[in-house]
Length: 417
Image (tube, rainbow, N blue to C red; front, top):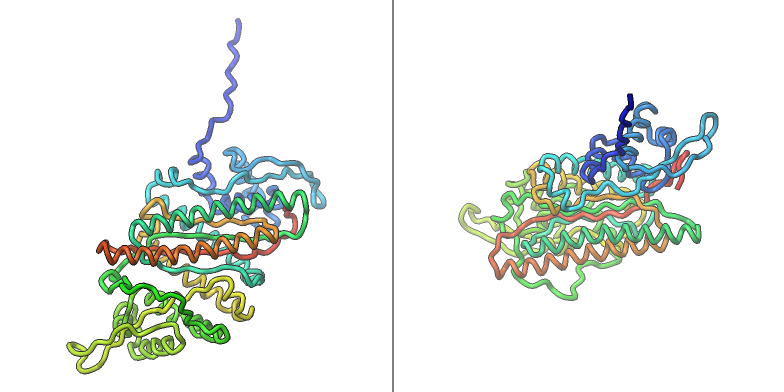
């Protein structure tokens, strides 16, 4: 009797959505892919460096990621001491959803994936701050700002942030080539970018638009006094909140207290202090009605409480380290607010990415310059959007953008660049 030979069926062709679902199924897998995008590692080296439970658990995650082509075998390395040689792997790509794939996901799945990604980025920030590398370079960048936009402006801002991310990946590719042919000092960096819709709450009722044109050529900051002005804002979370909200629309002390809580007298005192420091300006004063003879003063931020790389580099390092975490906490609070109100992933073109990068000095400088330029570009787009909104009477939108570029701790034992 002849036996019909069985057909050998190769591995099924996994789709990009299949691969991403495997990566995001466990935070440890996302960590593995993120780290192995930078360097070759095997299960035992990863376990020795980052933990992750038992070695057996880490090894099983490696095997699953290899199966779905999220990791690729590179070479066999001699053991670091007793034991057998180890297979080393590298991630061929970052765990990033393209817009078409992302739009196919239900909103609850988008929200889960987004929160995992933000938590991973938060860990990266925390590691750098503990290792004192976050502010080790004076040209690092960390900024976030809520923007008042129309639909056209929103689309332009979100496209700009997305394009910036791909430009930064190209910088890394160029740096890798240069480091391969001319080995030199490398910079282990992390970049994080976000552009998402924030809740409007009652803000639209309070006048989000500045109808007069922006003043040209005016610099409200004295460079010699910049550190003092800076410190007075960042010394208090309440001051930062005031600056954030008054960048969006004029408010009085009583309005701020009604919406966000607090003693109106204390808030009024802080508003006057920030005005005296040049951060706020008086735009209106009202009497009569419920005010019973008192005058209600309305303030607006002269410019956002955010700083480009040039200004930040003038701040002493000890001040930078003290206030960077507070800035990140404020940014994280803006993210949490959007998640709680379910606006963060309400539209599929939102942007949230972070990536570890291995750069040379040239690529680092060009990456930071690109982030700085995009930051200024989105502020200019907001000015154009506000001007259009005054004419069109379209309902304003609020979107938040965030930019980060900083040095991360170098590889630890057992890691290979």
